[in-house]
Length: 130
Image 1: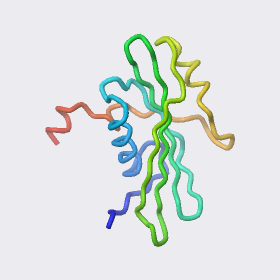
Image 2: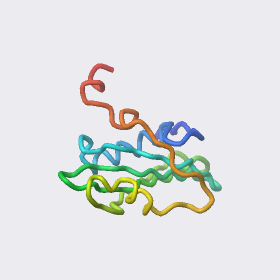
Image 3: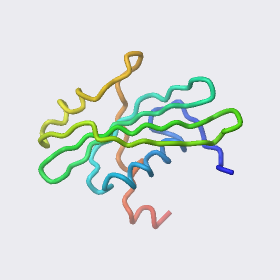
């Protein structure tokens, strides 16, 4: 049985966000990630939906990804979790603002909040000392 994930209303905080970050770190080289932003999670019926934007420096290019999770918070499938990481744009390194502006946004929502990179992607030596 999957352990229950802690639910948080704060963008980028809580166990579901950490689990999503682990999925991102398995898909995108962690050492190249230079920025993270999270939208406020949305709850509908038995599920919580979270969306984040990730910036990666890949040589002389910047790549932008969205990561989305669905966390089942009630019902028979409680604790279920899925995550999708998708590249949505790329451009020159200095084009961060333009690339972020092109990321699709939900119309009913505030802009994403910046998340300190080290919250989701701690340095390897910091993980070993915990």
